[in-house]
Structures are given as structure tokens and as C-alpha cells.
Length: 257
Image 1 (cartoon, rainbow, N blue to C red):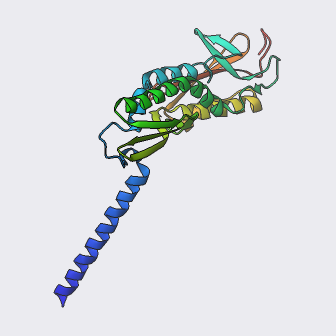
Image 2 (cartoon, helix red, strand yellow; image 1 turned 45 degrees about the vertical axis):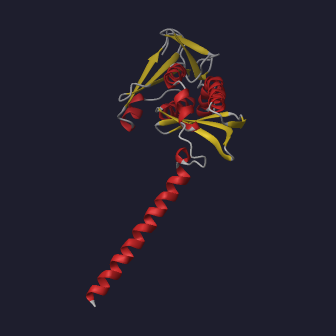
Image 3 (cartoon, rainbow, N blue to C red; image 1 turned 120 degrees about the horizontal axis):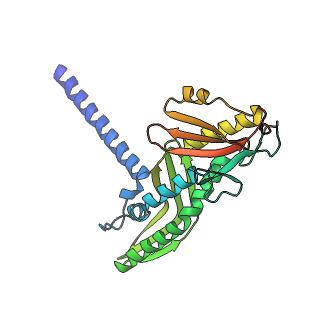
């Protein structure tokens, strides 16, 4: 009797294991399109090709340039500080008054700046990808879409809304929504910069130690300029990533204050 119960328990265990294995297989199938294939070819997947084609060092350099200029690649209203044109994120030309926000949607503005940088590179890579498959005997058809950039915690996501269909020997496969991930904490720095700007509009000034007590890994510097402007420098102590910008709020005339 005990032996039969033991055997039934083993069968039940095997069934549970089989269900888990099938579930994991389905999960991998739907979440990791890189490994799905109906053609059975051994070529590098389009996702891998695009990720390798994009120059991440170039992207990182341009993102750093944007970060050191207040979120803009070519600032229009700026303060020159240590050879950099720092965008005014909050500004008033009057004395004794709080500033007015210049970039009310800073995160979206930064995403758009990065999109403008990557667009040409992404289109070139997609064209090269299609030519690669043509050179290897595949028939291709494509629909080129836009490029989207999204700042997320600890990373930047690049989305390519394009579709590529490749065919060979009567079989075809579709690839779409290509994504590339770049590890970067610009999201956090932009969020803190936005919070500082809000404080400048409400109170005309902020206390840097408040932010450093909330975020021990963050260094916040405030540099007062002779015209009443303030330069804020946010530095991640772990990665050395920086975001810096200018503000002019509750300024005092020369000789006062």
C-alpha cells in the first residue's frame, strides 16, 4: 500500500516538473524573440545585429554631452560655465523674484534630444541589416518606423519601430520592435534636477544637503555666479555620471544680499 502511494507521489512530481518545464519554455518563447526562428538558419539574429551595429560609445559620449549642458545638445538660453553652455532650466531676469521653469517636461525633452542623435545612426544600421540578409540569399521586405528613447531607472531604452521580413526556401519570418538597452542612470539625475527646479520656483533656493541626505550616493554642488545665477552640479558618486544646469531665481543686485 505504502509503495503504491510512493509511486503515485513520484508520478505527481514528474507531472508537476513537466508543467514547470513547459511553462518556462513558453515564457522564454514569448519574452525572448531573439531565439525564436521558423527558418532554421544559423545567421546572427536581427536583434543582435542592430545591437552590435549601434555605436554605444558614441551614444554614451553624446548623452554625457547632453547631461553636462542641462539636457540639451545645443542650448539656446544658457550660462557659460567652465567652457560648457549650461541650459537655464529656470530663469528670471528680475531681482527678488522666483524663476520661471524653462523646460516644463525635462525628461521628455532629454529623450527627444537623444532621439535626434540616434535617428540617423539607427536608419543606417537598419539599411545595413537588410543588405546583410540580401547578400546571403534572403528575400527581404521592410517598413522603417520612428525611433523612440525612454529614460528608465538605471537604463535607457532605444526602441526602433521598424519591421523586417526575411524569406528563404518558402519560409519567412517577421521581426519588429527592435530594442537596445544602455546602462545609464540619467533618469535619476533628471528627476532630481526637476525637483530642484521646482524648489527654485517655489522658494527661490534649495538646500543641497537635503538631497544628499535622501540620496547618499549623490553629490549636489551649488555654485553662485556674479550675475545672481546658480550652477547646480549633480554627480553620482558610484558612476561619476553628472548632470549640470543653470538657474536664476531670487537674485540680488550687486552689492546686496
